[in-house]
Image 1: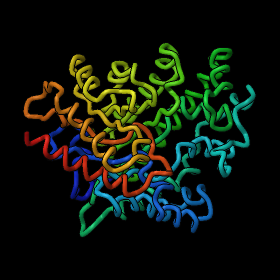
Image 2 (image 1 turned 90 degrees about the vertical axis):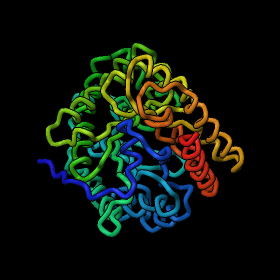
Image 3 (image 1 turned 90 degrees about the horizontal axis):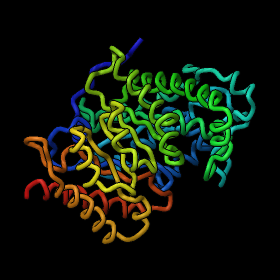
Amino acid sequence: MAQFKASPELLNDRFLKACRFEKTDRTPIWLMRQAGRYLPEYNATRSKAGSFLALAKNPQFAAEVTMQPLDRFELDAAILFSDILTIPDAMGLGLNFVQGEGPQFSKPLNTEKRILDLQVADMGQLTYVFDAVKEIRKALITNGKQRVPLIGFSGSPWTLACYMIEGAGSKDFYQTKSLMFKRPDLIQRVLDINIDSISEYLLQQIFSGAQAAMLFDTWGGLLSNEDYIKYSLLPMQKIIKRIKAHPEVPKDLPVMLFTKGGSSWLADMAGVGADVIGLDWSNSLGKSREQLNQLNKKIAIQGNLDPLVLLSDPKTIQNKAISLLEELALTSNKNEGLSSLDGHIFNLGHGISQFTPPENVQALIEQVIKTSTLLRKT
């Protein structure tokens, strides 16, 4: 049964307004992986926790690191600190993180029997995630009001399947794609179970207090056009439909979709019911907005600075931010009363690098705030 309750008043609702394509005084900004290893305070908390998994599975620590970038920077949204591989871990695949090598599963889906034995994730094994959402919502309250909205998330069915079958990260996910071509029935079984698991996982995050839900499709860009539609996009569409159809989910709760390397599928993504489409750096913000206008789609866009730009210097970062915003500002706008910049959330085209100097993030945020405010006045 849903536990969702009406939110306290938001001190800053720019992010939610942008998701709903409403007018904002400036462009809201948050950053993928904004709580992470580039912050010294995060590394201190992680050291205290003992390991990444111990950190992620402790609701108090997860809330603490979620709040760290908000305390340091003027961001417009918080995002749950967790990992996309919590679901396969709850399926019994044995997740662990090896120093310098990333995530690995001790029981990958490398045999037909393991795939046929696979079951929907036990949400009881994921209560630490839902408890973390509740803790973060508490931490966001100041004098009875909430500072910024909280985003919940999951990996996409295809992206989770890649790790589950491969057993670890990979450049091309050879085993997964080979299985897709040889035994599409087995791939479909994994995807169907992931669809059920992710749908319930996101619903439980929402009922615990998440105010937006995001699907991260990190590896959809590895697929051909036909295979992307079948194995990545359509499974995400099923999840979006289930969330939006649930009678206890607020009707205006935004659902966000992001496919890394998905620029050629913008029109397809625009048809699956997402309120916001995330763009990586291979997209043009202006051209993407124009394409959505031509499709008569009033869908917000999010992105799309190359995260490695943040490894340069403040002046370069500032110029890149100005360029992105000016390009979007020059795009024709078919929505009466709105700026061409409305319906846009500034973000990176993927997660922030661990080697990013925090002062460079500060320079980016300050420039986005300054430029997006000035452009709305011209």
